[in-house]
Length: 251
Image (cartoon, rainbow, N blue to C red; front, side, top):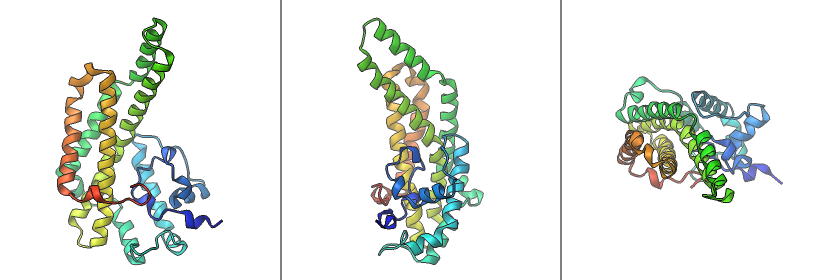
């Protein structure tokens, strides 16, 4: 069987880099390259994620010519070789004016606020486990009823922790579309805006899971939720067609 024919062209350009949760690693050329070269490693949400995203991008750049020859970047809608190179070059860090955009500052503010909250609540999952254990021992609920609650809280925590770092990184990438004249490059960065919006949606759902179990924490989280909701509105205003963007293999 020809494995190359099963690859999803360009899927790695618009994913959240959360390979541990991805169903398409066997069809992702970037993941295959990292595996073949021994660069695959657990990607932890946090400060190192930015460096890991850059490493993954650089790896993709190194193999872009091979990808094109292998068919991973071919098809009626695929950009030409020169355009691919330009796309990858433009995905690298840009001058500070992108970071100074009000939307980028919103994303960075969300990163800071969530970091503060996660540090304050670093024992939340442990406390939730102890609470559920007490309730089971007292007969308030069964173990079968407690486990889904704990799994949901852990999943919500991981989602918030993962996307808090990815959101500002990909927001800056999306904002580069505003200063690009080349339509294909604009579309490339529009896909990043779609990724950010999806990341925000998942984060808001995760925050709602936290609030469902801990409504007493609502007051402390109002600013964070308002910030994230505002960021989503601003992005949808700047990129009104982003929601309609079809990410290869993901939408």
